[in-house]
Image (tube, rainbow, N blue to C red; front, side, top):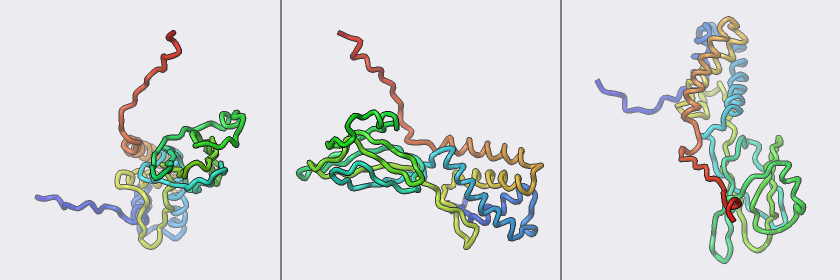
Length: 230
C-alpha cells in the first residue's frame, strides 16, 4: 500500500456546505434553493465570528503607506481586522533603516499636549472605525523620507456557494468551517441538533485555534529596576 503523495484536499465551498447540511440530517436530494441561500449568508456570518474570535494568521499581510511631511492621520483599508506590528522605514542620505513604533490608547493620545509637533514618528493611535485610521505622533517632518509599514491581519474573503469557488482559509480550518456552518444551519432547520453541533464546532475551533497563533517565539518578562537603585 502506498499513500497518494497529494496535498490537494480543498473542496469547493458548496461541497463543504452539503457536508454541513448532512450533519443536521438534510440529505443532498432534499436541498432547495432556499437552503443554499441561507447557507450563503450563514457562511459569511460564520467568517465574521471566526475573525472576531481570533485574528486569522493566514490573512497576515504587510501594508505600506508613504508618509507626507505635516500629515498625521492616514486612512487604512477597511479589511483590517487586527494589527500585529508597526514600524517606520526612514530613508535619509541613501541609507534606509527600520524602527518599531508603539501604540497609544485614545486616552494617551488625547493627553498629548502638542499633537502637531513634527519629528520622526515614534507612536501611533489606531482609530478603529468602519473605515479605520492611524494617527502618528510625532507628525512626520521633512528631514527624511518615511514609510509606514503595518503587519496586519485582514478580513477573510467572502464565501460563495456559486461557480465552484473555494474558501479563503487553509486546510487546518476546513473542519472548523463545516462544523460551524452545521451549527448555524441547525438553528434554522434542526433546533434539536443545535447543542450537539455547537459542541462539535467548539471542539474543532479549539483544535485549529491552538495552531493558528502568532510567531511562536519565547516571551521574556524583564523588570525595569533602574529606578530602585541609587
